[in-house]
Image 1 (cartoon, one colour):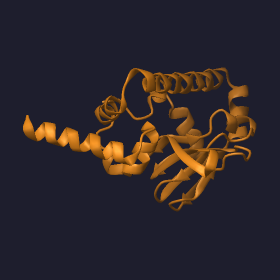
Image 2 (image 1 turned 30 degrees about the vertical axis):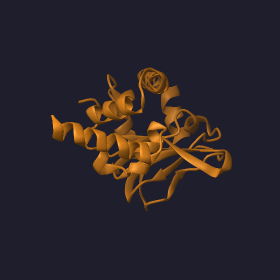
Image 3 (image 1 turned 45 degrees about the vertical axis):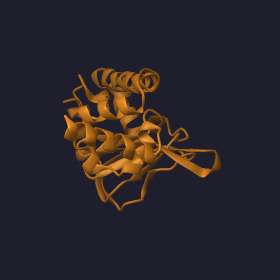
Image 4 (image 1 turned 90 degrees about the vertical axis):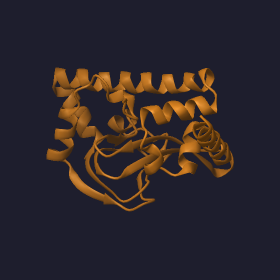
Length: 193
């Protein structure tokens, strides 16, 4: 089974986890607390020990769309904006109570600049994030809503237990009603088959 965040595949991120745990501070977030706020300087990188974060982008009229998630054992950041203190493109919100080892993104950048192997890993993280994002963008053209939902479930079967129907629908860029209908259709097909 693939992980939700495919950018990690093929990378040894032990160095980043070690950096967060050994040099960071353990911070607790309540559900709804912001890790980063869109439009403000992005500053943080975190290793999620417990909980889940969702990445939101706001569009006209104040409507939010979920663009991604960071789960336990993963990293949370607006990468690479956090390395340079650039304006965050997304708000990153705790989807439930969370515990995260947090470091300053500029400290991570200094580590990259001072160590060739770390610099290479930083570049590979950025490349893999781009590949993940590009693939997801193309999937909106390659697959209809049901196929995207089925592919998500095949990759992460437990996701329906971790996330709300509304957040899954937003991530797939469909309405909750569409996801409900897809689930109903799948259930009837399984029961009929």
